[in-house]
Amino acid sequence: MKRMFCVLLICLLLTGCTTQNKVQQTVFAMDTVMDLQVWGREADAAMPQLKALIGKMESTWSATLGNSVPECLNRGQTVTLTDSQKHFLEQVELLSKRTGSAFDPRLRSLSFAWGFFHEENRFEDFVLPTEKQIMAAIAEQKWDLGAVVKGYTGQQAAALLAQMDVDRAILNLGGNIQTFGSKPDGTPWQIGIQDPDGDGNVGILSIAGTMAVVTSGDYQRYFERDGKRYHHILDPVTGYPAESGLRSVTVICRDGVVADALSTALFVMGAEKGAEFWQTSDDFEAVFLLTDGRILATEGVKLSGCEYEVICREE
Ligand code: AMP
Ligand code: MG
Image 1 (tube, helix red, strand yellow):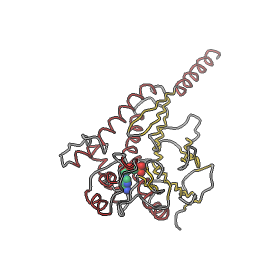
Image 2: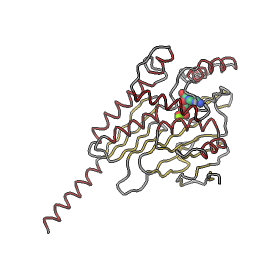
Image 3: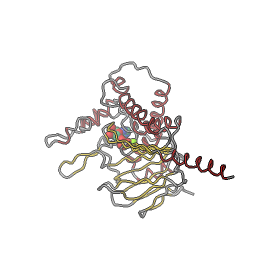
Image 4: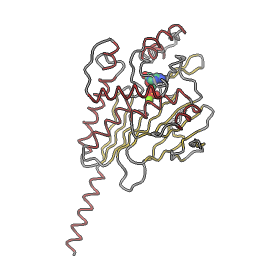
């Protein structure tokens, strides 16, 4: 009996050790700082694989690296795609249709006209694009998958971890969070929604299991001119940074590509249209931070630490 107890104790300790093995690393990729935390027996082995995946996703899908798929397509070159890459591009097209092109994957020239690819907009002598230049840039229809690449990367990272002896992980890919697995005690992940005006959080989301939690905000990339903020989320109709009464949108969804495309699209739509869009969907939840300080959350969201209004399904 005593021997059996000892064996049981050793087993328990070993299981404990396995879940205790945590590896954390910070990487700079896709023009942002990424924080990777992985728990489990193969957490060490997972890190270089995750970093290689992130690097590969950046070189394949970047809007600025010359040999990426979108840049080859933009030059009119024929590109041979893998089945999974084809599937990604098909999904992107469907999401563009689904959002009435609020998510538009062909706005590269427009982002360029606003200086978001060359950062000239940071300088005082950067001249804002004219109406004519804006319309010409929209018409060019050049690929830019910047609104979905991080979500896609999070999703691929979760698929990679699922093939390894990894218990759980939380990957912060610069505003895009991908959770993987559950905590040993079954409690949900606690994920802050960033305060657009500071380093803190405006509220905390409880997220269960493997999920993408993606935020698009006017504070993530912007410049100011004459006291006005010009941010990087562009309205494909007006060609200007979207002015929809929002500071940020956070989307919670099992599919990282959907989460990322919708965070951008809902930001363009604004809270009212975004709420209507949610009412006709069943694959995501969302939190809207409004410019007037209000917080709106769809009814499936578990949010604490702040006051908010709940968006319900219509009867
Ligand atoms: P996100 O941070 O996911 O909202 O993505 C913003 C990035 O997507 C920008 O930096 C642009 O490269 C690109 N982008 C801007 N506006 C749009 C839009 N309406 N639809 C799709 N991509 C966009
Ligand atoms: Mg996005």
